[in-house]
Structure formats: structure tokens, C-alpha cells
Length: 264
Image (cartoon, rainbow, N blue to C red; front, side, top):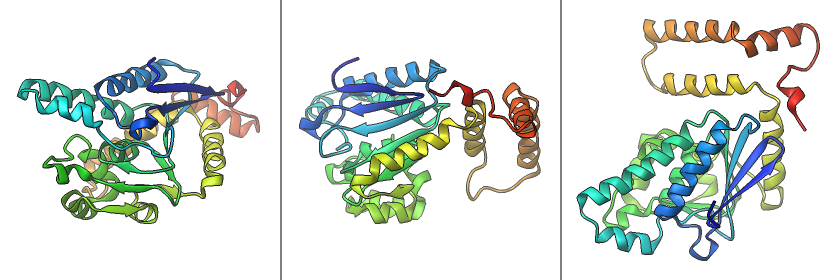
């Protein structure tokens, strides 16, 4: 793994740290590829039950690296398409990871950095964190990150911040839903550790099925007969699964379920 991305194991949690503080953790094609590879490795590792995404130095992620953008300016359409597809694939991998993901947002998150925050399941930020969708100021569009950002903050807010490129605060990000919670800087890691404690007590198979369920039940979508039937099928499937049976049995027998027995 390149030095631009650090991987640390903390019991059943893994911490991925963007490690380019000299450029405020801006990403280039190499960091995008490294992050995609690391996510695939963690997806396959059954000992990993949750993943934290963090940034080294004063910023979380400043978006795309300027030198990378200069290179892209000289690319033709096909090269730009391949480059964009790599970023889109990485974001999809992060979004659809079967394990819960937490963004640790301790400083600025701009452009693609906002996309990383939005693609995580839970995002905890400090009051000093700030956000901006800066693409419009460069004559660009936040296209690859848009599915995750619009989902996180809603269409109305996305229209404003995509179109103006203005900065907004952690409290505004929390109000919009981009941040799950705001924590004082000195309590940030304790808050994340508390969330990890809860997550690691839960069923890994349930985490996978719940994340799939959330994608299927779209906010504002029509509650159709097909959707109702799909939710009934989903709960029936998980009730007869190995972990579903174990969870009910452990509750009735007043003991810890087997997945908690794997804790350090």
C-alpha cells in the first residue's frame, strides 16, 4: 500500500487514512486506485467489521489534486472517461461496502472530499469542519459524486451548493444530513470509538442486509405493493439465515450471540 494511504487495524475495525497532508489530502489517480484496492481487501476480510475513513493533517480531503487536474486537462475524451470511471467505481465500492463505514471529518472537505463523506454510512465532524462543492468555480460539474451528495443532503440543498460553490459549516452540514453528528474536536475519537463499539456488537450479516434494504427503500419513493412484498421477503430471508436464527436463540437463551464472541 502506498504511503498516501495508511491502513490501521483496531480490533475488528479498520482505519483508512488519506495521507497527503502537504496537499490537504487531495486525491489523484494513484490515491483513488489505492483506496479502491484497500476497500476490496477489507470487504473480503471477515475479521473487519467496520471501516473508518480519516485524513491526516489539518484537512479531511480537499478534492482533486491540482497536478492531477493539470494532467487531465491535457487528456482526450477517452482518457477522461476512463479516469472518471475509476473515481466513480471507487465511490460505488465505498458506498456498497458490506461493513458499516464512518467518515471522521476533522477539517475541510471540498469537492470530491464531500463525495467521500456522503458515500459513508455515518459521518462525524468537528465544528471546525467546512464543506464546499467547488467544481462549478472551475467550470466543472460534481458529476461522479452527485448520486451520494444529493442522497445525503437532498435535491433542494444540492441545487444551491452545486450551483453556488459556496462554503458551508459543520452545523449546516449536520442540518442538511451530510453529517450525522457534530462532535467537539477533543471528543471526536471517543465519539467514533463509541459508535464502533455499538457496530461491532451487531450482526455482520444484518449490516449487509440492512444496507441493501436502505438502497431498495428510497426516500420519497412510492410505497407500492411490490415494495411491500419485497420487504416481507427480506425479513423472511434473514429470519431463516444462520445469523438470524442465532440472534433469536441467543436472545431467548440470555447469552451473547456468536459474533460478539469474536470480539477482542
